[in-house]
Length: 367
Image 1: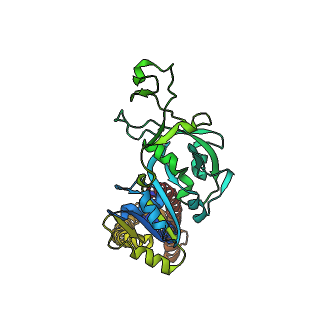
Image 2 (image 1 turned 135 degrees about the vertical axis):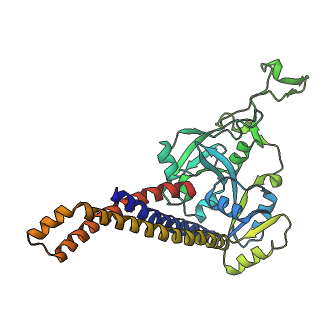
Image 3 (image 1 turned 180 degrees about the vertical axis):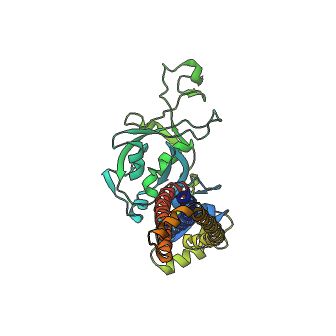
């Protein structure tokens, strides 16, 4: 009971400090490696976290027109990101090959997602789902309560990435065209011919056959049907979630950011500044928690002192016996201090083990 009380008291501040330290390091490391993010006007914290760690998707989107606009500045690499889709609860991210170059991600086996319907898995994602190159994975339904929503798509696993110890390890990567397919902007219809059911035909004449909305769409891309897929928007109007920019130098970074200061629809942000601002708030909470932990520690110490005094009272006969056999007060005090030290060491060991377990669980949920 005494060990448990001490362990809980020690575990809380140790766990809090470990989690805050780990989160801070991961946020800052990822932010420093991404000089600029471009996205729709709105919550800059939401845009930063979503673009860096793929948690959900920004509330608003920009278009490929903005991507071309930033890219044509020719001030460094610009990488489009499309978010908002999952497979087996893991994020599915649409991007280009430049992303893997900038993040120094290389396939452990297979290739990057180059063709419509291909997907490359992060290291941990493949490990947890027990998947390998050549297997398939079905995306999650975007909206379970919307019967008209686009159906899940069966993706072909073409590669597994090397471990990077970052958010990329838990992610599935596809190309931009596959993301637009998942969103319903693109699709492939079953081939229409004279054998097509009359229930799927809207109109028919000698020169053409027009199908209605009931015509079945392909849910898998393969060599036989890949040419049947098409998109219902112009290239420049196709949506993307955000842009990651990697300027050549500080001058190019400053110019790129400056070009969007007064833009009415697109914002440019430095992730490292947003993360620093976010961490300031986190550290304020940590300071408040530390204060509460001190008060809790004082209360636990008083509780432990009360237990020691109670133990002395209940062990009077044992103490008297020790005096009779020649034990002096100093030795007796050392015996009680030794017992306290053993209890404290056991409690500290239990608290550290528990803290590491809680930290691993919490980090997985937070980032």
